[in-house]
Amino acid sequence: MFVERTELQQLKIYYLFMHADGSPSMTEANYLSDILTKSNLPEEAKKDFYAFCGQKSLMLSTATFETVIAEMDALLGEKTSSCFLFPLSTLDNNKNLQAQTIWTLINLGYADGDYSDAEKQFISHLVERWKMDPTLVAEFTDTASTILALTMQKEWIQNTSKPYLTIHSIVQELDRSISSMAANIEISISEADIA
Image (cartoon, rainbow, N blue to C red; front, side, top):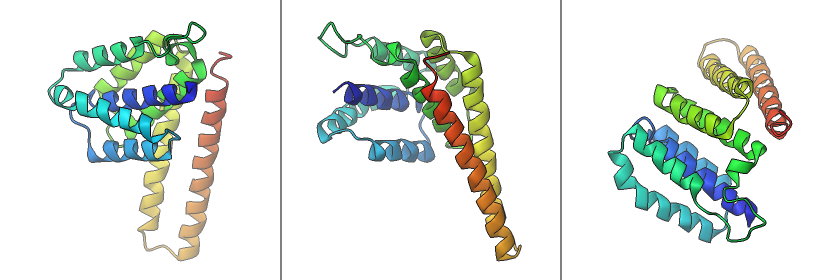
């Protein structure tokens, strides 16, 4: 139940984030769809997410950046449990989940190739709210940017006229580099509560 509520809250933040710089791009929408598909949310929680999106879509289509931030703050301020044993907002009290959320938001920002100023401000707002270590966020941003560059290099090399074995070797090396970076980020996320 705790994981389900947290994952649903993260998905709603991702949805709001996509509107930080205007209407979401198709690439961003596909990225969010992939996250939802890979989630372990039961159908009832997915229906809740779709209802949230439907409820917010019209308002967000003409919303200012400040409105999107206010919606996100309201979402994080919602009481997610009636039991006194659980914090009111699971994301506001879990550094690992915060780090995971920020990492996903940065990747969502880079999904369309344009990590906009509004998206950066949205993330900065969360980083300040959660009092996150700026060096961790800088690591996430640098890594996401590098992974994007390596992915673009991989796509480029695959479309060259170089010999197959040369292309295959370079692609394997790029894949190893990307995998290594992703693994390092997973370690950083798992250690976020130590910082």
